Structures are given as structure tokens and as C-alpha cells.
Image (cartoon, rainbow, N blue to C red; front, side):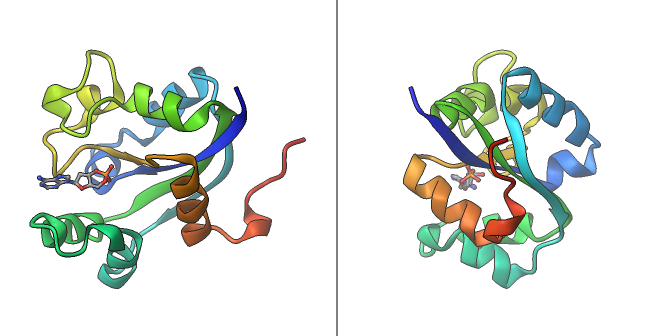
Length: 142
Ligand code: CMP
């Protein structure tokens, strides 16, 4: 398996509830290395740009309103098979359907407020990391 990077966002609901540290700690314990990290409060336009592929879907307005309502923590994470492994650790999009002990099961409330985002595939991860980080901000592998 290859070393990959994936984009992780700790969403406003989890940041508001002070779960940032617990989520980062869990991800590190699962073998992810934080290659870049920042805490930002997105404008609505920035949230719309990030989720542009969902424009036109019924939940788009709710999604961008939520993602711009408070600070988020964005990370570029690295490990072997990072995209699939991260998706396993966070669980299903709907926290009520997520497996026990996954991050969304532990910290999410419902599909609209599900604590974290993750890239769905490697190509998406490259685009998503590039949306939020300049190349020099993502530390090279030692
Ligand atoms: P995320 O992994 O950030 O990618 C897109 C997001 O859209 C998803 O998590 C959900 O939070 C959100 N989403 C998907 N389906 C719905 C829905 N039916 N209602 C509200 N939000 C949704």
C-alpha cells in the first residue's frame, strides 16, 4: 500500500463542543501524521468553493451555512492508505449509521452536523489539500 495524504476538517459543531484535541489525538493514535494544520473561520463563499461539487443538491445551502458558522480545524494527514483508513476511522456520513467508536459516532449528531469531513478518494484529497494549503505549508516527509 502507498503512503497517501488526505484532507481532514474538524467541523464547527465539534470545534464548538471542544472536541478538537480528542479528535486529533485519536487520529494520531491511528497512525496519521499531521503534515499541515490551521484553524480558520470560513466565509460563506469559501465554504461554497470547497463544496462546489455539491452545488444544486438539496442540502447545499444548509451545508455551507453550517460550515461557515464558526471556526474549523483543517489538516493534511499522511499515512499508508490514508484515504481509506481515515474514512474507516470517521465512519459513515450519517453519525446515526456510523459504526461504534468511529469519530462520527462519538462526536457527530446527524448527517448535517457530523463532526468531521474527509476526502473520498486520492485525487479529491490532492484537490482539497490544494484548496486550503499552499505547497510550502505542507511539510515534506522527513
Ligand atoms: P462531508 O463529508 O463534509 O461531505 C459533504 C457533506 O454534506 C457531508 O459530509 C454531510 O455533512 C453533508 N450532507 C450530506 N447529505 C446531507 C443531507 N441529506 N443533509 C444535510 N447535509 C448532508
